[in-house]
Structures are given as C-alpha cells and as structure tokens.
Image (cartoon, rainbow, N blue to C red):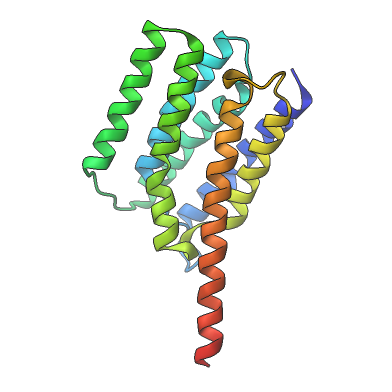
Length: 196
C-alpha cells in the first residue's frame, strides 16, 4: 500500500481521539459536534470504502473515518448533546439509502461517486454549526483532517473517483470548516478588543 495513503489514514484516525476527548470535556472549551452529521458521514464513508476497495482504489482513509465516526457518535451520545431531526436530515438519510441502492445495482465507481456527493451534502449541518458556533469547533483537529485528506490524495495512483475522489472531497470540506471557524473566531477576538 502507498505510504501516503497509510500516513494520511493514520493521521486522520489519530484526530478522532482529541475530537472525542473535546466532546466529552465538561469545561468551557468543550466541542459541540452534530451527531447526525457524523452518523451519516460514517455510513457514507463505509459505502465509499467498500466500493473503492472492490474497485482496487484508495479506500483506507474512508474506512478509518468510518470507524472513527462511530467513536464520535458514541462520544456525542455519552455527552448527551441534543440534536433535532428536520426535513434536511431526512433528505440526507434518503441519499445514504440511495447510495446503497446504487452500490448494489450499478458499478463500484458510481457508488463511490454517489457517496462523495452525499458526503458533501451531509456536511452541511456541521458547516452550519461551525458558522453558528465557531468557538465550539475544534479548529486544530479539522486542520489535522485537512492534512490527512491532502496526504491521502497524494497517494492516489491516478486521477479517478476511486483513487482521489474521497480524499479530495474530505480535504475541501475540512478546508471550509477550518476557514469558517478561524474567520469567525478572529472576528470575535477583534470585536472583543474594540469593546475594551
């Protein structure tokens, strides 16, 4: 297996430990994550991993993210964070089911592509939460996820959906989350300085 794929996967998996720890933290720096996002991400990660593996592609990062996502969901449940189920969550769940149907009825490449598209849409709740509560987003952890996606993409054997589609989309999602958390946090610091 390509060393970039292994290193990217290991970095990505290691980021789940501080994330789970920050979710379970009782202090003011506690991280608040959207459990539905991580549940859907894990499902879609599993679909992508299986489809990419069967196609001989770059599957390790999505497999480890699937595993880590379940640890995050468990941490959120243990922390008793509230979340609501809206029409949007129903649509995303429907897309996850649709990805499974595509996987069993068409090609692995189409299943990987469908899971990537659904993954991007399933990321909207976390992006929205980061916009609303930037201080509750663990920026450095998402920087780690960004690096993991970038390194894993470097390990792709070719420019294709099953080789670089998942790591590139993961990278871009995390770049957006990092940018929103840094921009809003910097804005809050600036307004605090002006008010003193």
